[in-house]
Image (cartoon, rainbow, N blue to C red):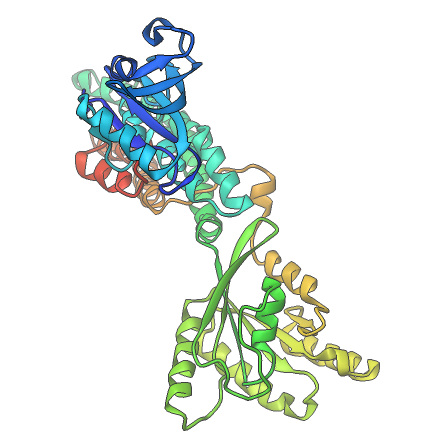
Length: 466
């Protein structure tokens, strides 16, 4: 699949800016760039050392297009493993397109999505999981997702998988060797040691599989639905969390007719808050549609915040009934009860409410005033406690990619079969079948085993220029 064409693309976001970076990669990248670049010091760039930067002009015949900085990265010491040239020009849309069109006329072709990183993978500069981490790093929008992507791009996940694969491969080789001497009935692979290895591999795979629950929410953000009766302060709470006037606030019940969503980072974890229409019986057709959407958002949410007006103490029985309805309808959902408007309560009433909520929902409640901002930090701390951030602090490997999860799950199932075979005293030829399958699934993760369709699906999600 390694294409010998020299490719070109804009490596910075499209649009006008202070500077733009245009990237070329391929065997002829330096020679093509050299024809269109005139150094201010008269240097011939093909004779310059790798990882050097040169000031000059991009010229098209007698016409000067722009004054630029040209960076040289010679193979194999480049991102793609090929000759790479990066041109930092002024960020005018016109200048960017003029330079790119110039190189296209000189024999380059436009890079496809992710082609620079694809070439890095095909040339052995990155394995497949590291290449996928590049896309995750680009799309990371909070501290946790950035940390995980950086660890994976540096090879933390790959090295863990590669070590397990190597150990399994060593035993697989001994099992295969036994098959060559089947008539002599000899064992080269110590079955006790092999059983210990399978148990250790299963332990590591189980830890990686379990980490996906955390990794998935870190990568995609944790959806939190804010629900409750009309006019209890749901929109005010959303505005307090976001620290901006995102939702319309009114004393008129039923103001929010549709869901409003926004995301913030709490302790490096992304939380996606959904302000929903108030739940109540209504004959208003539009409001009824909004209430229907509320239940759809509860279905999608990982955490449900049930908000009620603490100043309406006589309505707490109805609050309990509504919470029970949600619990019965969505038994797996985490429900956090928020008593709003506590700033207008006297101390005795607060203490009584505190005790009541503790009995209703253990520690999953907060006394809060969305209008005054009181209790918002406690709410954020409660939300953060729902995520196992310990794995982040310990720098444990966390799986965030569903493709990796699927391959790990299949490898785990094959290793279980191997262990069962060892316990049952199966012959080496039968053990070898399951071992080969486990090795196959390990290879899928790091890219030892690929096909064009798989690579096409992965790199199609990249931006052009990366």
